[in-house]
Image 1: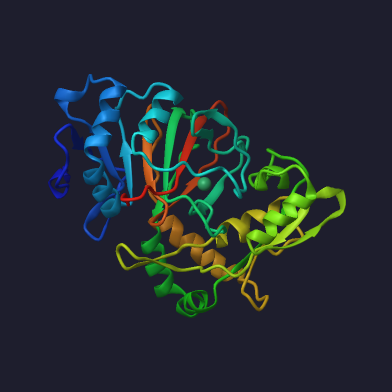
Image 2: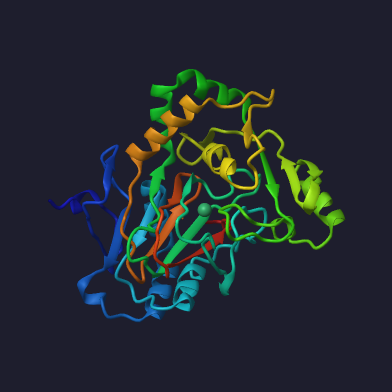
Length: 342
Ligand code: FE2
């Protein structure tokens, strides 16, 4: 069944495509999938970079409405093509600091998404929700899909918020009023074997402990040096539910999952991960409800070579499925906004 009729205001060079993987929320399919219109199918990457520049307002309106746009069937054969497409939006690159996962530079503003080896998954999160200054627009690129799994499921954060209000109203009320603090242990040097193995040196882009301490203070972190040279940090209280000022919608903008679930399985085994400002922890039952809510609302699209997904990081969370057989090459380009845009 075609649902194309719901998509209006598309530039004529593209058409919307529907797949069984999409889900409908509030009457619209998520995510929006765009492909070149038939007449424009054979255009070169350069054409699409110019197209972005000419249609930036229309694309941003679509991003605001849908939360994520999957560009499928475009001629982005190499990471460099992807880099130029993402740069065509003219956003300011987000420097790769304060993240948790190990990333390597590929070309331009393109990085490997996460160096976590096969067999590990990454739970839903907004990129760097645990940091005051987070990227606003993310682009993921599929250079090589895994043979099986390894997709990047997405979820609308406002849908998660609404479902959590229905299931756990008191917990959500407390989150809104109090916010959360996040605790982690950054190793001495990168440890790509774990999903959040970025060392304190590359977390802060520093080489000495003194500089790391200065950066931690700038972010409002409490910190402590542990045996073996790792650094334990506890963030200031951060909002756990944010109102998106552009839409008035409340977003499940926190890192509860990342910190409460994954941290338990890394070197952080003796770290609590996420706490309320008074030190209270989140119960396993509540975490289980959150997992159910995420699973129910998530959309998993099968990666294809040349796919690019553009994500509004204020509205949509992403995650990574398990995969077991390498290779898999998914890349990311992160941006702050650009004055006048978004
Ligand atoms: Fe991420």
